[in-house]
Length: 187
Ligand SMILES: [Fe+2]
Image (cartoon, rainbow, N blue to C red; front, side, top):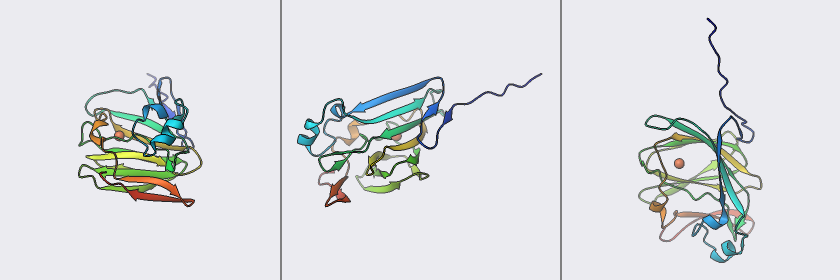
């Protein structure tokens, strides 16, 4: 009997694009990122259909123990002095972690625990980021190219955006031509 060898989905490590039959994509425009950027006037001035980031993910099984795989493509740019970033989230199931792999571009991963303590990790091609449970996470593109990062996370993790109503404790801006990370009051 011939044993079948199935062709699995593929990912291009140079840019994070998948080759698979069923790819789910979600585009996030600036208009949906209400209250995310600190310079409200500059945010209002952007055309509402300005694409900040896109996520593509494989269609895979869901349930306890199952994993999702996806790539975030975060465009380069700034709103005022603040670099483009993802909305960021805690997982609804707080104990669930995630792994990010930097593929292309350069940026930062902002991590923040439930006590509001935040820190940054450099994201670059080949970087591996182990995001523990109980830790909110956000990507920030500080470069001039698209920042793409591959992620693997439990399908049961879910997203909790509301828990970050006060935002993150660090903002990353360009000041005097330099990338600067600043602590935020009431972060
Ligand atoms: Fe996540």
